[in-house]
Image 1 (cartoon, rainbow, N blue to C red):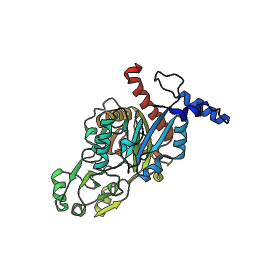
Image 2: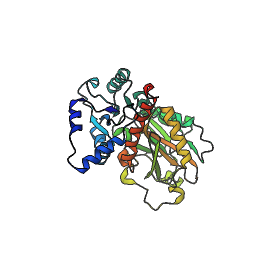
Image 3: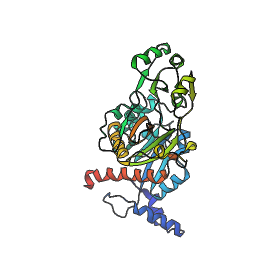
Image 4: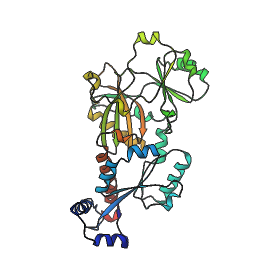
Length: 355
């Protein structure tokens, strides 16, 4: 949290507000002064952001910026054509860019400016950018006494030679149909292009590197579990419909489809079977998200979960996404600004001079 200083700011503070709204805004800023040992000093939180133009448009919506401004949070665009250390100063860096060069820039910056909170560490993001490693931590979590079980669909990684896929699938004992997903998640549209393979022969038509996941019937609904620090929000999205044995016998080939779920496919208001629509138990989500935050080292991500059709408490995690489309999450503006303030409040509470 940065103190507003300098002659320009001092002069501004000496000026009388021109209207009642300005007075209210200044009083509102005072309310968010954190314990820095300097009472009655207005503060502001400077958040530098490095996002793609698409992510900037979807995330930095006017409602978020207005609410943030009222809470003393200022978003500042990072100029990618200039050295990062020449910009700022920042309290927080919010980012979602890909590539080795950007990761190295951030790692160097974190080493030079450890007091700046980087959301999230590049090494942690890299872990969930590979679908081979992304779900490994889920299988090791003990979720007993949480009103449900969480697993991962059986899967197989193929890095090359499409002609070897049918034999590899047979050897692994995977059951058709299989969902094919690109191995690497790099923010491109291609990394979210999925395919469904119905028969053994068509598997050789797939394009490695990829991950093959057994398809689990789930009532055509996926639960998008958004995590922002300790906050959890869940929305329902329509997904692929269930596949019965007759359909499996009567279909062959590989069917490609775009991103399965999106805001336009919201299932929250649909007239669904209660057994399909019921959200995962809250204790289950809380423990799962807490464990994944610690194991992955991430604060900003979402979990794609499905419930095995015909069960009430058997769930699968099928994907984990870093810095998802929070603009699709209800009330994301309040959740996100509260999270940013809590991050800085904890930092200053832990600062030796404030203990």
